Length: 311
Ligand code: PEP
Ligand code: MG
Picture 1 (cartoon, protein in one colour):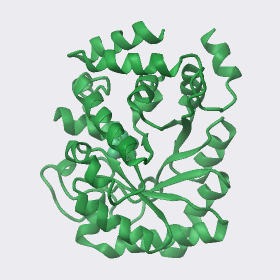
Picture 2 (picture 1 turned 90 degrees about the vertical axis):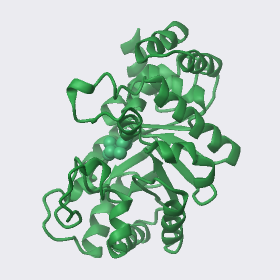
Picture 3 (picture 1 turned 30 degrees about the vertical axis):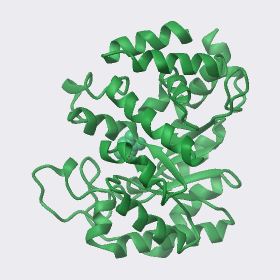
Picture 4 (picture 1 turned 135 degrees about the vertical axis):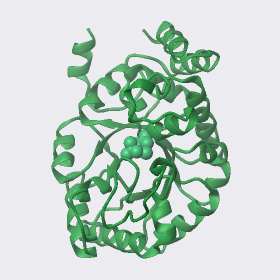
C-alpha cells in the first residue's frame, strides 16, 4: 500500500484534507536539478552552491558562477528555487574561502562568517545569482547559512535586496531559533537546517556515527526549537521551511507540518515518499503527532508517539 501510494503521488503537496505544503528537492548542480525535475518536486528548497566548487583553488568569476547557477534555475523555470550562499568550512572546506587553521572548524569561520571576514566573496556570489536570475527570467530566493544573530540576518538581507533578490536565512544554530522573531524582522523567509541544528543543540558532531543517536532529528529538544521557529514564522506571516534530513523522513515530515512548517525540502529520492505520506494523513493528525512528540523526553519516545498517531 505504501509503495502504491508513492507511485501514485502527483506532486501536489498537501495533507489528505487539503492543507498545502510545498515538497521541494535539495540539489547541488544543474545535473541534480534536471534529475529532480523528473520527480514530482514542486521546486528546489536548497541549492547547496558550495558543493559546485569543492575542487577549486581559485574563486570562480561572477560570470562563471552565473552560468552554473543559471543551469539550476533553468531546470526549474517558473518554479520556486532557493539558492543558498556558500556554506564553506567545517565538513565542506573551500580552498578559496577558508583560510584559518582552526581547532574546531564546526564552531569556526564557516558559512556567513566567511562574509564577515571578506564581504567581497558574498557580493560576487550575489551578483552571480542576480545575473543568472536576469539571464533566465527567474526570481530565485536566496538564503545565508550559519546565521547566529539578527544583525547578521539584517546585513545579509540588505545585500540581497540591493540586488533585487528575496532574502531569507537558515536556522541551524539554537541562538537563531530562539531569536527567530527578531530575525524575521529583517528577512522574508526562514529555512531550518536540522542537520546542523541537531549538531549544535546536542553538542554532537554530525559526522560521528558513534553519536548518531544524539544527532537524531527526533530529539525532542530539536523538535522544540523547530516548533518555536515555526510559531515565530506564523506570527510574522512568513514561510518557514525545513531543508535538513528531517524533511526526508516521511513520519517526521508530518510532525514538522503539524508544528507549522510550510515547506519541506529533501533529497530527490525522498520527495515522493514524503509527499505520499503527507497525503495520507490529516492536518489534525499532524498537529496531534507534533504535540505528542513534544511531550516526550527521548528521540525513541518521540518517534513512537508520532507513529501511534500517524500510522
Ligand atoms: C542542515 O544543516 O540541515 C542543512 C540543510 O545544511 P547542510 O546539511 O548543507 O549543512
Ligand atoms: Mg547546515
